[in-house]
View 1 (cartoon, rainbow, N blue to C red):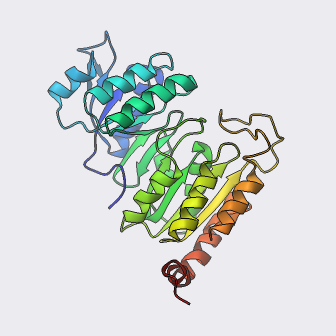
View 2 (view 1 turned 60 degrees about the horizontal axis):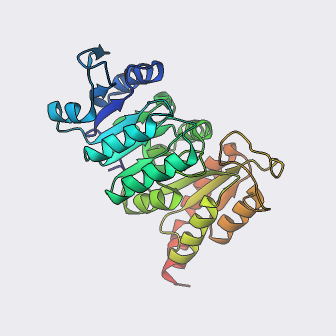
Length: 304
């Protein structure tokens, strides 16, 4: 098993005729992802990499009713409307690669998707990959291999780096998910962790956080309350970032004295999570966490 996507996922690409959309359509096809159609208003009737293009999501769904996932490469000013169009077409998983969508527009589109029980990943994210089955995103697929480690990250580049370190150390991944680095996003760490908890193939979870916001602290609170059903290893980027200065991602800023790497590390450590000082330490910490899994399970169950 895997979470969110697998070999049966049927994909629509919104913004397929743009530079990024057409480029990554080719990469996803080469990886084996089932891409049924693309959408760009005004470009209906054309083809990109032999993928038929339609003027609207409704037209694409009429011709390809098996589509169940959409990936968004639409420029920021039009991206919220593209997401809403996919929601109205009852596509239940939408992955938003687009960056620089204004926060209030993001809040509105996420609220609308939530009201229709639609899962949104991103915006400003690298997407999702289930190694060996499908990738719906922009990550380099050759860095990943199939296995039992679930990976969830706010950073795309760090997700690639950690996945490659895991792969070289013999740890394959069940599914790897980049949730995005914006201050307001769809699925968060807790949402994804719950899915990994229920996935029988996922034996352990690697969490890659960064400064800013409270996503890592909310995951820590969830783990303290529920206990660790599976070993968790984390890394927090931005330890040397100065307060009040945004670093890279829009959400990566220490504000009002909170959201620092130290605070996030302390919160996760208090929940029983092993936190690495460097990404390269994650495989060893993961090995140690898996070797003490029985102890962790006993603690969750309240045993001595």
